[in-house]
Image 1 (cartoon, rainbow, N blue to C red):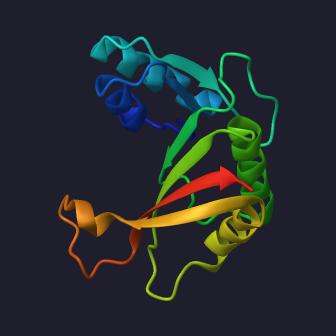
Image 2: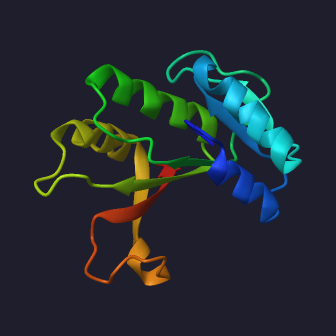
Length: 151
């Protein structure tokens, strides 16, 4: 999981049967991730990852990469680093799934930087989350799941 924060998404994936879970975030997030893994009896690895930087050998390549709410108001350099990290992780065989919520009625221009960059290097499928319920109405087009694979 990229930008795992508290690790909720990765921990749920593990509970649902994921073979291997690696929670990544900045160094400032390591303590809470480790603590939450202990509280949940998780075997997930907790690994520091700065987008665009070197990737630890503990983080598998060519697998499923997930990110929940990691695209929000980034500058150009951060968007570029996130795309580079995703591409390094998925390689030619993996998949990246990113949930996104547009938080402004006119769209966030800074978020477009990420989407333009990743759409240049990946095939994309957009899935409306409203079809799954979870309190999201059918008219809600602002919460989506993007599935990316390398071109």
